[in-house]
Length: 319
Image 1 (cartoon, rainbow, N blue to C red):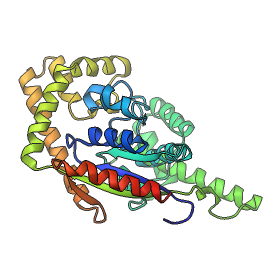
Image 2 (tube, rainbow, N blue to C red; image 1 turned 30 degrees about the vertical axis):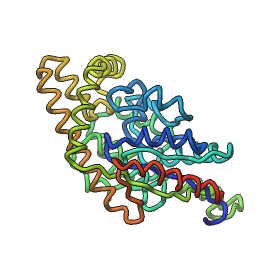
Image 3 (cartoon, rainbow, N blue to C red; image 1 turned 90 degrees about the horizontal axis):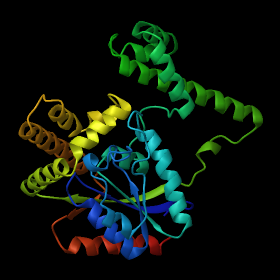
Image 4 (cartoon, one colour; image 1 turned 90 degrees about the vertical axis):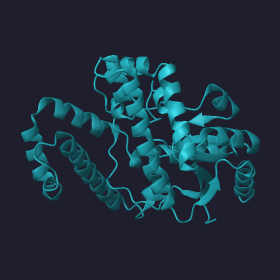
């Protein structure tokens, strides 16, 4: 381990691969704490449809990063890295092992440093400013603003794409603010790179493999359980509170709302949600196969829990 870096374990895999159960038991066994790395489970009030850990799993060890973002907010890999780093540092300071758990491969690789972030990170004040500007100004005005401050970004975005225009504005303005802050630090005589002095994470990644037929069956069972457990009511409550929030575009919520609004039967909504989830799981598996240095473990093998415990104890022993 490089000096000053914090060791952590990431347990990854597609949805319904059993990550939450294995991770919670492991954390309880070795003195660990769970850090969420799922881009949908960050949203508040969306416990059922995004598959948060159960109360029993959460009781085994501290869990962090679930339900921390309002459903009408946009969350990014850059923001995840900032949030996760702060949480990991606190866990390590308590003498516990950070265990990152999730199915969003981009987040895990961004945290590991193997995937460069695609845009500067905007702070909450900048996001709020752009939210107000987007509500006031028509799309052509936002487009002209982007063309003025980031013409190279503007040429890559269709003129009528309001969402991508606002995102590009956020990125361009965040980059400008970062350059200004660097200039202020240089004038003050700060050392270059001081803003990156946080020690970072030495991440060991374990990927859970599940045979496709088994995974498909688990997904169908999970989606049925979500609908039976109140996902339709959860989706309706989020829409009532937040309107057409970005989080409601997630898998299962669109189908639940279609059923609630009479646009689909329950059977049609279930079938569509199952199919979308299976397609998503396939994309997750493809992503995780590309992480060459990950340790691949059979999720159905009883020895996998022992292998994870051995990994975890080795990481704690080298702290």
